[in-house]
Length: 152
Image (cartoon, rainbow, N blue to C red; front, side):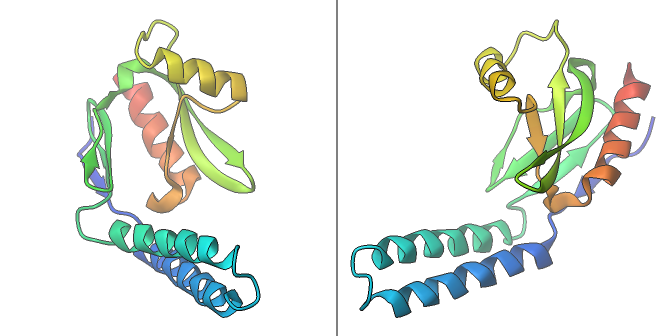
C-alpha cells in the first residue's frame, strides 16, 4: 500500500509557544506589586505552559506514525493505541477558535470510546483529533484519507 511515515512535531512552532509563555511569565512577575492576588496565578499558569512546550520539544516526546494498518500518536512520552483504518468512517478538517485541526469520525459499528463519542458529538466536536503541530491539516487529510480509502 505505502511505506510507513513517521512525523515529528514542528519544533519552531513549539519554540515560539515556549517564548510567548516565558514572556507572559515575565510580564506576570512585573505585575506582582500591582496585582498581588492575580499575578502569582498567572506566573504559575505561564510557567506551566513554558514547561509543557519545553517537554514537547524533547526528542521522542511526540510523534505521529502512519502505517498500512492505521496510525498511532505519542504525546508527552505516552504512546496511544493504534487507530485502525477499518474503524474510521472519515477524516475532516475542523476549525475551533480559529485554529484548524484534523479530526476523524468512527464508523457506527465501532464500539469503542462510547462515552467520549457521546460527549464530543453533543458538543459538535469530532470523535478524535490530531495535533496541527505535524503539518498543515490539509496535507495530513489527503495522506490519511487516501490510506483509509485504500485500506477499505
